[in-house]
Image (cartoon, rainbow, N blue to C red):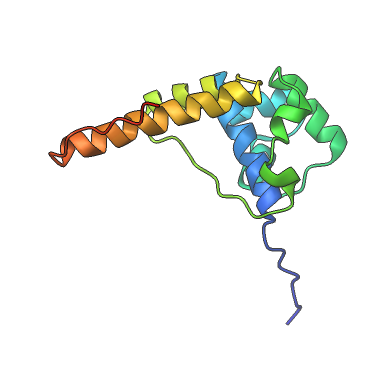
Length: 139
């Protein structure tokens, strides 16, 4: 029996693939259409998006061009890409729109402000649902 070398998916490759998928869906492109733009089959796009196939720099440049974004947007990894990352797939259209809009904010201070606002709103919702009065953290 021939031994096959099984390669585990690298968390960074999975994250890049997920960002490709989010961007492709935001543009309402099918995997087939993206593949046509890049010069590969839709099956190859599936492999890139799942992180099961490594992307060359040349292919990453082509995909970024086809998705009308920079390579930097596809490589936006926490901690410089040195740590394992999790991938969140939006479940609803509202979540997808929110995630897509958030990725368009490049200013780190503004991104932190938006995150803090959403976290506060979520906390208010949880407190309200549990019957607890809202708290105030005013200086």
